[in-house]
Image 1: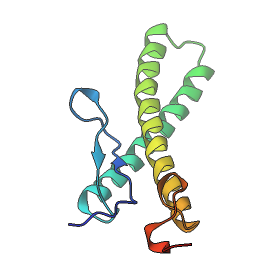
Image 2: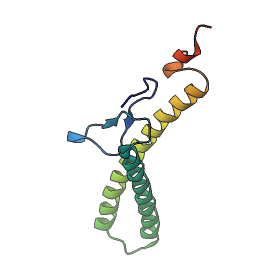
Image 3: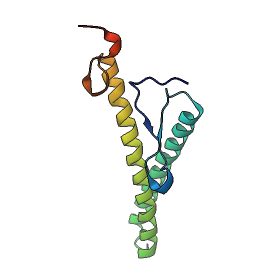
Length: 116
């Protein structure tokens, strides 16, 4: 497998051992990339479901503090996932934008551009 040096490592939507970030070197078309895409989709759907559930609970005057604490704990997990997804997608978008503009990472000229 070859890896384009202009393609950054992809931050995966799940933590590695000890909760540390987990990265993948990929062109975006492999089995692990597809698994990461699926995981991101599920995580975003779950976050949306939690928001809908929160709206329902806020309309219920009989909701208990224990129920709200439980929901907030799940929303904390979901927001952590969503932030990780946003960070990963933002990094990939920046590289895509740089490549389209004819520059490499950090605005450096692309090695394919030749001398200017």
